[in-house]
Image (cartoon, rainbow, N blue to C red; front, side, top):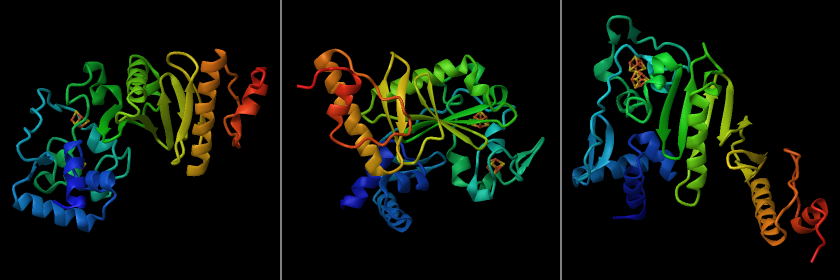
Amino acid sequence: MDQATLQIVRAVEAGATTMKGIVDATGLSRLKVERALNALEKQKLLIRDGQGFRVAGRQAPPPPSRQCGSCNACCDILEVAAVDKPVNQLCRHWQTGTGCTIYDRRPQMCRSFVCAWLQGHLDDDWFPEKAGLIVHFSQDAVNVTVDDHCPDRWREEPYFSKLSEWSLNGIKRIGNRGYATLVVSGPDKFLLLGRTIVPDPTLFGTAFLPLTSDTFRFWKAKSPEHLQRLHARVAEIERIRQEFGSCAIPENEDDDPQPPYRPALLRLSNHASA
Ligand code: SF4
Ligand code: SF4
């Protein structure tokens, strides 16, 4: 098995079930992924079914015991590019009383989509039709999409506490496939760091440091190099904390620290430099 094919098998094993998921997870071209998937299917190493791709020999996830019932939130709230459906606009293929009018030829995303409530990860407060929130998992994130009729619902209870808890779990798993908790509400995007809300997270990432057990100081990166510098300073703060028992934390969210970080941090903390 060549390197690319191996990468694809690993991506599917890690939970990528759609073509887009595999392309995103591997960084390979769509053509390359398609060719490798066809070869894997021919060799019966991979199976494609209604729930997407899975590695042969692996059981498909058990069918959800819950039913969508009256809910059509994902046909309303989520973006489905394959049918030109923007976020928070009922799909033109949805008809009251009939449901999806193109059910047999609906896009792969619609076939494979299962929200976290339907999977049984959340209690009935989270039934999407009632909650106005759709929670779904991707390879490295818990994604929360909010109905534009209740844009702040995710900040309310019991939702916010649960999302904060998931966010902390995702942060603790960093280094062991951590995940981010992201909220999209209309045009606004948020990253959750425990109970700390990061508005408009940048594509380059966010460096953060715990202040309490569930709150964080954060700095949003403007470039990969900026993120590296922020991470290096966070590491220095941790070292100083270990060495002196405390370290002052720079408050400016937008600063761009330059090495060497230690002297400035020691000055800020009123610690004598070694
Ligand atoms: S949001 Fe969940 S429960 Fe509602 S229709 Fe979609 S998959 Fe079913
Ligand atoms: S194509 Fe069908 S399943 Fe997909 S969003 Fe539209 S109505 Fe829903």
